[in-house]
Image (cartoon, rainbow, N blue to C red):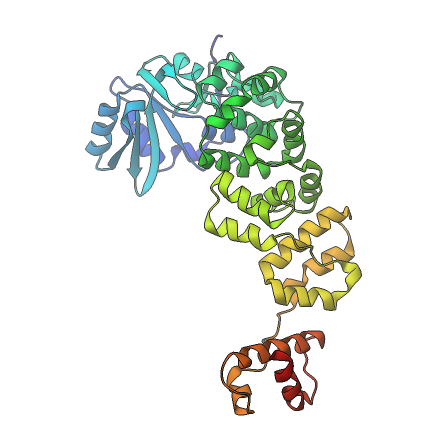
Length: 410
């Protein structure tokens, strides 16, 4: 395929320090350096690039020499694969030597360095990620990425099956990027290759699968993409359970303005508390993530039909985060529309009402003659139940009820 060049307009970020300084140090004296990958793609879409990676014709040792000669720090992140992390003014940039794959096993590759930009482009995954941007603002395309970006297509470079066999994570990246950037149907060759090579997903680490899935779930077209994956049998093996794409779609209609990856994961595959444990194990979730899923548990959320008093009780018992999570999932489960006033009002309860603190202490019970020991705690629990039944209010004669409560507690 002949290379296409295109002048990128409005790339002021390319001229700003520290990136401009790093490119100036690398892109001279017989070596060439270009921004590559996602930063180029995002810039072409009018998005501000967050992480900027650089490709260079220089060998890793020369990259290290130039970075250190400029007074910056060079971290040998992956010298065998040609990658050096240049830390310039406390900002890291991955700088990788052009390369071609010599041998792959679906997870790792043995590479050989090259000075051929087209050869380097051909080893990348998707055409829209195979673009380069030189510091004069010229976009270089050896794989048809510009045309695909304009058309809203996401497809593999060259043979889809070959690209997937080089790294099985590319199956998930294919669907994630489709959900984020594509405007039309899934590329048929890529989809067929993903199905044909699906057994390779079992070779991926849980951490890599987790990272891709959580990014996929918040993409603009996540619900329909996940539904296609589920229909092809590509999702269940990843999570170890039966996915529920219809519930995910209903939740996505509710949280479209601020998509929540973990809540969407729960909508897709959590029904009972045991599901939270399974997801924690299968995806190596963090303790914080696992605790949040466990708090969602298998309990239903509040319902507008139960009234606000019941919702206040749920908020007190669950806490703000679990209350919001359960309520949002219950809303999605109900099928009520996103503009439902009743559900929306309940969801704002956690912001407009602060649960009161239970007004009785163990010290007060002791002062009123409750015997020391476990009976104090049991009596407190009985009193709290009475307080909750009274909509966070104790009867005026609660002290006279203590003997009876103590008797019940025994």
